[in-house]
Every structure is written in structure tokens, then in C-alpha cells.
Image 1 (cartoon, rainbow, N blue to C red):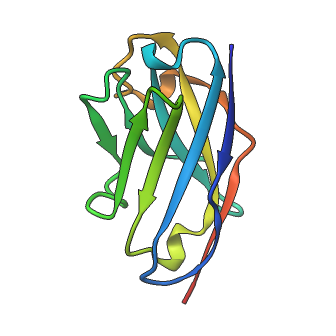
Image 2 (spheres, rainbow, N blue to C red):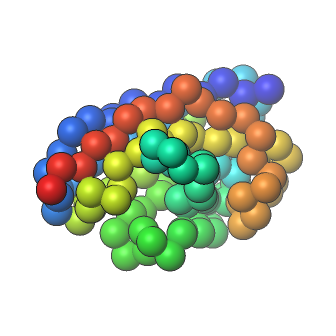
Length: 125
């Protein structure tokens, strides 16, 4: 089991930037693919981005490609989501997630099974 704690959310104007962080503990972080998901009010949770256990592979939802960047620092057991050119439609609770399996690519959103408590991101127009 892995424990995840997100931080870095907040209120930002459209066009602005935020960086989310997710600190992990428990299972060996360096062997685990990590991802970010989000859930807007009244909508289902959706995949945002993922990074493989090695950091060599990254995956993004079409809606955030070119604006968001996922990265990881295995020495700090932390995964990041840099969000640039934010839009009001990016407003949501953002959740960090860990792959259920070690040495995963993170390419399938269905393999994520451990979740953080979420951090609110609000983008004003």
C-alpha cells in the first residue's frame, strides 16, 4: 500500500500556472508508475497525466497536452504536475494516484489503485 498527499492547489486566473506536488510513502516509489486525475463538479473523474516507473514514459489527456507536464523526483518520493496556460475548464479537484503494480508504464488509467485526498484547483476567467 502507498500513501499519497497532494499539495499546491489554489485559485489562479486564466492563463496562469500552478505546480501540484504529490508526496508518496509506503511502497517503493521508484518502482511505481504515478498519475494525476481530476474530477470537476458533477462530472466523473478523468485521467490527466501519467509517468512510468522509470520516468522514461509520459502520457497526457488530449485536453492538457502541450500545457501540462508530469515529472518525478525519486530521491524525494514526489511526483509533480506543472500546469501552464490554465483554463476555467481545468477547474477540478486533482488527485494523485499510484499504479497497483510495480514497474508499470502508467499507460493504462485502469491500473491506478491508490489515491490521495485531492487538492482543489480553481481557474477564474
